Image 1 (cartoon, rainbow, N blue to C red):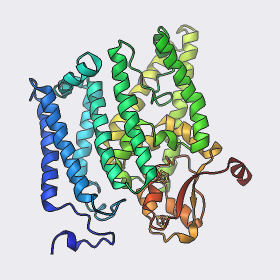
Image 2 (spheres, rainbow, N blue to C red):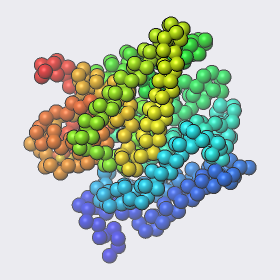
Image 3 (spheres, helix red, strand yellow):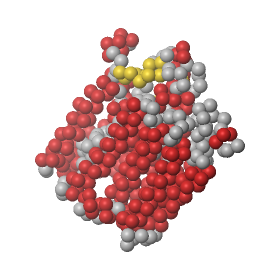
Image 4 (cartoon, rainbow, N blue to C red):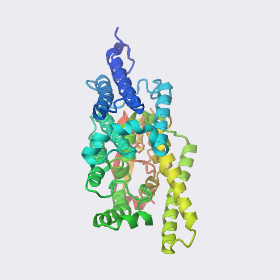
Length: 436
Ligand code: SF4
Ligand code: SF4
């Protein structure tokens, strides 16, 4: 009897064959070793070749996983072994990965010289796209985009039965590659400030600070960038969230959401579903939104008074926010802890944009997840795979629509429901008003 014949899964065998497993492990190991060796100067004379081999080996590993687990098998989530595999159940591999990610982020923010060997691998690509050697942020953007594209391809095959999952994944891949990687590189090539149109205040926390506005307003393009940022923050965000819920941004545009949905997909079941976590989440995420709003206002008052009022305090406040929220939370914890705490820790507990979108979604949006409670068999798939830690099943059991500020509208709860209980809908606004 072959290994796959012994699977007890009702949906059929999902195991990777032994040969494919070995090849995938070989590819992942080789890719990682090549990139780690670059830290110590390996391949300094042939950076494009070394980067190509490293990325190629990692992509091959993902390709083998796609072929072994998803091609020719039923589409959708795999329940078998999720809470037993080392990678997806906080085992040794998950810890090793978490430590490696965290170490990379610490080096990226505070010790960039320690990863200079990896940064140098990106020089040829950076010269081609930007006309200058790479810095650590270009290299980081390269890895980030590679992860979204490769793991996005895996996600597309896994959820190929769902048009909604297909389109939103294509969308996050497009925004990451086009708006967060190629366009800023092109602006740099044109000797213009690198502007990221898919990030705006309050997520891009210093976008509306007096210093940033002052430096951008010296050029026509910079003025346009500020104007577009203001429209995106104060007009597009409330209008689109009213129409479609926060998903238009968190699950279709944002790079943080894009990485969480693609590279973070194997870890979505690790989110904490407890009431305590929900309480902490509400205090933290709204606290961060309050902080950045107060800080931005304070900096403008201070600037109007030419630094005469709380000058050093506001600068210290700005530095502390950049360190704690901009670096430690969004980077080190937000991505480094994927394999241990789930893929949306930052979005759930720390992102001020998610808090802003969530307030509009909770009180002024047509978006909701409707439930057909009579069909629910209480299997719990929906709650298990909700990356935002929402206990979806408890709503389904009561037949109650889900209108939660934190829901990013990823739609995975609806995909994994075996009974078709859940639907993501943009309801009638008048009905919503009458319900209140
Ligand atoms: S409730 Fe459903 S759509 Fe909302 S975040 Fe959770 S899994 Fe995604
Ligand atoms: S996945 Fe569907 S059937 Fe299972 S608990 Fe959730 S709503 Fe009920």
